[in-house]
Every structure is written in structure tokens, then in C-alpha cells.
Image 1 (cartoon, rainbow, N blue to C red):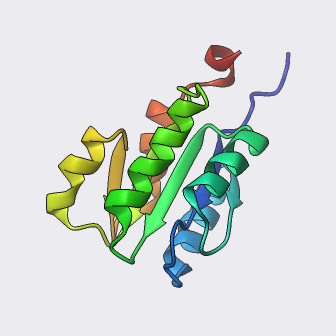
Image 2: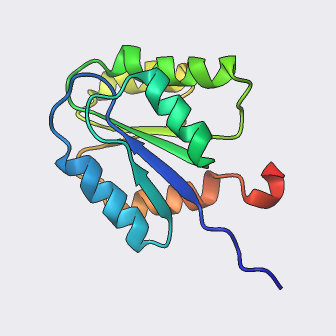
Length: 138
């Protein structure tokens, strides 16, 4: 019997935002929840994020933005995934996102937005319930 593959999550900070404490907390928290996490570091372009997601064969991209550029950067990641024909990566977001922007982001393909103060366990539960498993990706 083979060991079950861990959910792989890429945590990314798109744009010029220079604050990453929250993203690091989420990456470490999801690791503690049993997931493999990859953190891309600060100031990543949507193209770099998608390239890393493909190279790392991730199940989830978690985008974090505090700079206010989320209405451009988050949808751009989804667009680039579509251009590559990738449909099985769950894209979620978080950070300093005004509640009134959440419907727009969801319309653009971001599956869920976790605002500041969300518990890591809530994010982990959402991922577990919504990520496609390796069996369905094969």
C-alpha cells in the first residue's frame, strides 16, 4: 500500500508588497497541518508564481497581498494558469482585502479569500475539502 501524497501548497507574494510575516505564518501553519508548503518570497510576478507552481506540481496557490494590487495580480495568476491549460490548481487569496473586493475576485476565479485574522486551521480545512487529490489529477 502506497503512502498518500501530501497536499502541496505554494504561498506567493505577488507585486511590490514588502511585508510577508502573514504569508510565512500561513506557510508554516499549513506545514504543521501536514501539507507540503513552498514559499516563493517577496515581489513575485504572476508569471514567476505560475512557473513555480508548475515546476513544483502544486495543488494549491495561496496568494497574499497587502499592497492593494490584488484586483490585478490575483486574476492575472488565474489567467496565466488558464493560458497554460491548467485547471486543477486551487487558487486562494488573503491579506488586506476589502470585503467589497471579494465578489470581484471570486468572479475572476479566486476560489476563496481569507481575510486577516483567519485561523490557519480554517484555511487548512478549506484546502482539504476543495483540493483535487493526486488520484483525480493523474
